[in-house]
Length: 179
Ligand SMILES: CC(C)(COP(=O)(O)OP(=O)(O)OC[C@H]1O[C@@H](n2cnc3c(N)ncnc32)[C@H](O)[C@@H]1OP(=O)(O)O)[C@@H](O)C(=O)NCCC(=O)NCCS
Image 1: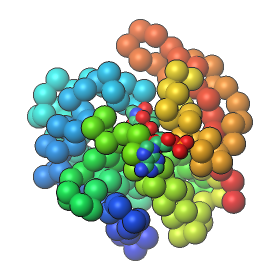
Image 2: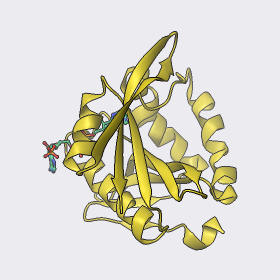
Image 3: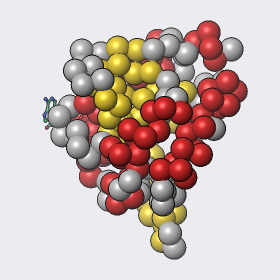
Image 4: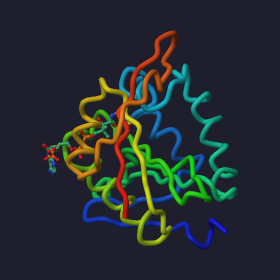
C-alpha cells in the first residue's frame, strides 16, 4: 500500500509533502501560469487556474494507486509551495522508476531543486528500494541537465524525438542513478 510507504520528508530548508486541492492556487501562481517555464516538464499549457485545479484533483487517486509518488516542495521559512517532485513510470518487474521535478521561476538558482531531488533519490533507493531511477531531459533544458550532473547522475543515451511539444519533437538525454 502506498499509504504505508508514503512519507512527508524534510531537508534543511524544505518540507516535501502531498499536494492537495488547496495547494493548487499557490502552485499555479508560482509555476503553472507560465508555460514557457514548464514546457519541458509538462506539455499542456493551462489557460486558467481552474484547468490546473482539475489536474490536481486527480492526484488523490494517483496517490492511492501506488504507482505514483508526488510531493509538493515547501519552503519552511515562508511555508510557500515552491515546486513539485515526483517518481513515476514505476516498473515493478525491473524495479525502476523515473523522476520529474520543477521549481518556481521565483525560487530557482538557490539550490532548492538540488536539495529536494537529492532527498527524493535517497528515499527512492533507501525506502522504496528501487534499483534504478531515470531522468529524461530535453537536450535544450540546460538547467535540468546541470542539476542531474551535479547530483552525479550518469548520462546514458539519447532518446531521439522522445518529447513532443506542440508540433515539434525534441531529443532527450537519459540520465540514470543506480544503487
Ligand atoms: C530544472 C530546474 C528544477 C533546475 O532548478 P535550479 O533552480 O536551476 O536548481 P538549483 O538551484 O538546485 O541548482 C542550480 C544552481 O543554483 C546555484 N545556487 C545559487 N544559490 C545557491 C544556494 N544557496 N545553494 C546551492 N546552490 C545555489 C548553484 O550554482 C547551483 O549549481 P551547482 O549545483 O553547480 O552549484 C529548474 O530549472 C526548473 O524547474 N525548470 C523548469 C521545469 C523543468 O524543466 N523541470 C525538469 C524537467 S526534466
